[in-house]
Amino acid sequence: MESLKNTKIKIDPTGKFPYVDVSGGELWINILRESLKYGLAPKSWTDYLHLTVGGTLSNAGISGQAFRHGPQISNVHQLEVITGKGELVKCSPDQNEDLFYSVLGGLGQFGIITQARISLEPAPAMVKWIRVLYSDFKTFTRDQEYLISSEKTFDYVEGFVIINRTDLMNHWRSSFSPRDPVQASHFTSSGKTLFCLEVAKYYDHGKTDEVAKEVEMLLSQLSYISSTLFFSEVPYIEFLDRVHVSEIKLRSKGLWEVPHPWLNLLIPRSKITEFAEGVFSMILTDSSKGPILIYPVNKSKWDNRTSVVIPEEDVFYLVAVLSSAVPSSTGNDDLDHMLKKNKRILDFCKAANLGVKQYLAHYSRQEEWKVHFGPRWEVFVQRKSAYDPLAMLAPGQRIFQKGLLLS
Image (cartoon, rainbow, N blue to C red):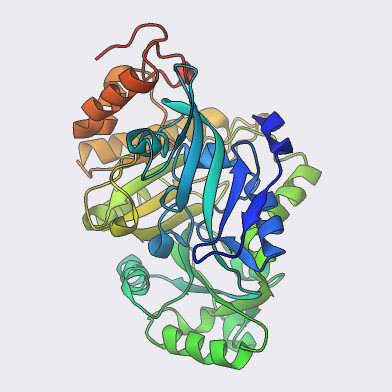
């Protein structure tokens, strides 16, 4: 797909609904750089921007803006797709509608995305980036849910779990400033599991005082540990491309090209406390070799016509255990150890009947995929039969046997 990146990024900034036309092999970071030249940017992102458009649209594309704008697949006007029949088809909500929604979140099973038309919006210049800590999980999730349900709120809402870390504040001080340095210097985690709320407010030059007042008002509604408010102000592109900074550091140490046994779960709001008690307290008990993200999104921002499978509740959480293994290790950061821990988490979710759905799912048998899709399995099969009847596309996912479509 990288050969498609040679196609020029074309932006229409003039209409009521500005958009960008890009190839399926283009990287999101390049789209951001080009669209910013017009003062525009896509609405929804992934946390890591050095991914292809076709790749994220074949899954969903989730980040801290998803509570407001939905995933990336909710912000697409049109696609050009090569189906499993070898047909080149343009599709949109008004043209070849079923193929359009099949391909979005379709895991590459129905067609290869060669072009996409992505919705744009005016881009801010700066970001006020804030982190605060909680020791109580229910208070943490209550505040997260309050923020994603409010009309006046932050532009980005995420969070992460901190297990058995004592050097956290020193780590943050390199890029974040404490609101009260003296108070912050006295904070100790005492070995507790902590929960970090990470939020951001976007603004333009000349609006610094105005946004400061707005942020102060929003923070006054929350119940975080008062001594743990840390903030930073960075350009918009620097904020969105923040993970790349970590990538550069890890590459310099030879720690990027290692196995990443990631586990991404979508968990109904009604089950998130039970999940936390069973997983954060009983399974993930040692310091994680990678971040553990946790934040809620609104189901109303997801289009149920796409192929993505999500929990049925109005609010559900993304929990992402983003581990990095050390190939030479035989300890807790060993790949086998991490895979076993992932299995323990999945086994717990199944035994507790939490209604969890995997995001970026991996299964080895069709029967497992049937359970994953549940009542939507028959629609998935019908779409496969219509657009890739010989199961030529993405056979490595083991959903369908190549050359033999099973119902």
